[in-house]
Amino acid sequence: MSESVPNWLQEKSGTGAGEQPVVIATYRLTRYYGDGVVVRALDGVDMTVHRGEFLTVMGPSGSGKSTLLNLLGALDRPTSGRVIVNGEDLATIRDIDRFRARTVGFVFQLHNLLPTLTARENVEVPMYGQGISKSKMRRRAEHLLELVGLANRMDHLPAQLSGGQRQRVAVARALANDPAIILADEPTGSLDTQSGNEIMELFEHINQTQRTTILIVTHDPRVARRTRRILTMRDGRIVDDHPIQDVVWEDLRDLAQSRLGEMLLKGEDKALLERLGVATSDSVVALRVLRSWLLRVLKGGDEAA
Ligand SMILES: Nc1ncnc2c1ncn2[C@@H]1O[C@H](COP(=O)(O)OP(=O)(O)OP(=O)(O)O)[C@@H](O)[C@H]1O
Ligand SMILES: [Mg+2]
Image (tube, rainbow, N blue to C red; front, side):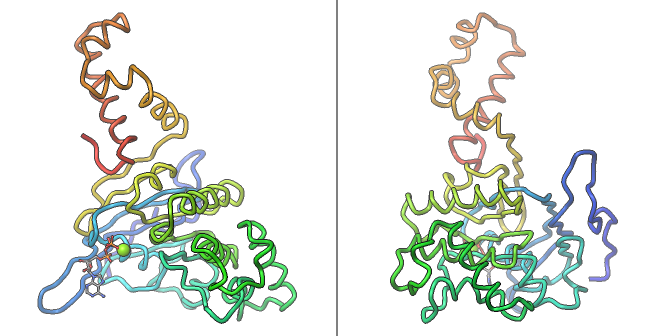
């Protein structure tokens, strides 16, 4: 616990020209459970997330995704290592409740709304104790419910809303204090495809319009494919990290649907090169690389062939 942390982890400013500031950094982060048989839920995670990123964490059940998210949001404490959020070391932060309320917004698989409160009141809950007047809280809750497309459901109780609508209320609630970061643990896990898509569209919209950093844990490659970077976990470690440029992503998606893409995936390299009018050994290597990227697109980045 007394290890010194590299300076760049503590920096609030950017780490390079044109780069956004670091909003989340972990340093040799571990979380072990149990005293007899120790479970290494997190086993030395180093990661950096910049402001405005929209990323997913994937990986098999039990690989440590929720554990990581809970540590990033200060819902749990590490066994060792550091978590730095918005330039603050969570181990030394004075007012952790304030941090939780103001810096991060959580969305869980099951919305966790309070059943006796209306949609509007649920969105107001995180604003209590923040020195905000009642009328301002109300206006803000209404504004957020409009943002998530529930202007006509403000006074409904959770039980009177559909699953997708409840999850949208949960997103509005996560945004209540205008957090820098949204942490979402399988937010579409309990939803049908269409409601899941709507939640993802909402996250995209929030990420683009408010520059909120959004980190989503998911099992669903279709969800991951909509984000810009995919971290893959296995046995408490990050084993893969793919930042995907928008334009490359789009192009690869198009390619995957095309005849050339089909030939590429089938391994018809020779025919493909003939068709393109080239035939050198370098080209074969290039095709191999392209093929592995294409497989990543199709598998949602879970695993390259
Ligand atoms: N409170 C706990 N006590 C003991 N072991 C735990 C506890 N919470 C998690 N674990 C263990 O830590 C490991 C990581 O769990 P975690 O919940 O982070 O996995 P996950 O990747 O989120 O899985 P899933 O996809 O199933 O949600 C698992 O082996 C799990 O059994
Ligand atoms: Mg989990």
